[in-house]
Length: 580
Image 1 (spheres, one colour):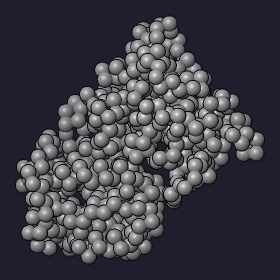
Image 2 (image 1 turned 90 degrees about the vertical axis):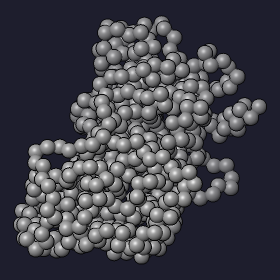
Image 3 (image 1 turned 180 degrees about the vertical axis):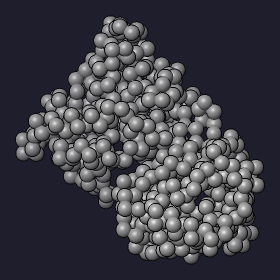
């Protein structure tokens, strides 16, 4: 009864989706033998307010997000590639229906459209008889948005192949049976962050997040996995968009915390970093989660170099051959299909398939956007295509189009997928989670054109290996503290220097570095040249029975134990930048 009532209630708000979309050649729709759904945040709601009367969320009225539009284009590109392939689905075409998904809780219309059949939904119809509008879908971006809509999709076992939701809760197949993801879960990301902290021997850290499922899940896992590691979580806070960011950062500074994990979605991370700049918070180490580690705007903020060092974690960036050409070609024909707002039917505006800024975006703006989730979207579309290939019993020449293909059949094939894609292997475990291929990037904000430099990797296929090249971390070169000593004792490794820091600094900075090296004698560290060191990850430590170790360990630490000599190291780095 509750199941049926929920459908009836939601259907009352979804009338506009049962009109046929006429823009078959637009960014949002493409006809095909099998339809895929796509959810992308083309706009973001900056100020969420309580709703006291039923109302429609019209995404186009909110802040544009060109990053979301770039993600949409990656899906279109992948579908075009699949359709042009003569071997994957040789005589079958994929189409799509894409919607702007800007709200955490109010974008049900698109979902109801996906699970409908000819404009109706029949909750009591047997699963093996029901054919929803889409065979599978990808998106949305973000854990909260995904958790909100997932029950409507997964109860009919429609594959929800997600590119941007990392909450560990979604790995629970009892709750989310058809949820598949092409990005690692928060569990993997938190383990990666902890390995970075332990690698450098840091033990006095802050954890700042946002008030959503993504951050709360990350904080819960962080608290769990730092037990018995020697790491003390000295400060933690989940911030709202309207929070007092200045007060939070002042508290962190007063506690002499110099390592800050910012595990938040982009809007919150941007607020944190901009506040740190304006409040003159200096010489910190900022560990960026994958949501903002490749942000294209923050590294260009004036004076950002003063806040310290930003180390980011992102999915290993993979190029998409042909994507740039696809975008340039698409931009050359966009204006032909564009209809101004005045020509769009009024009922069409509420369907969230409207984007005024999209047609005005240049090819360069799209191509240069944050690429963190591009391969994940690309892999999602190819995973669906490979599963359909198996269901339709395709060979190199044709697919059996008379074979019945239901969404749950694709889901059954996805668990067994194992195929190469742009030098990566796409495969899933029993929870439909992917293999991991993370990159550690260092922000270079002290140059005219900010850069992201690869300084480390973390892979779980074909074996689990984590490595960081210390020679690329600025403060390592003239490290007179014992930060690496802690790491060496813990992992049984020795630091190495593979190439001089001057290789990637400007000539002026390089000469300053050489002069400073004389003034600040480097620690007598063993050098292992021309070799990449790596170690096999240890399993995460098991939590202590009462969970009280963390607080006891924090309370027993003295100030100098909490930070070691990190502040002195960062001050030395600051002295280098002044001379350059």
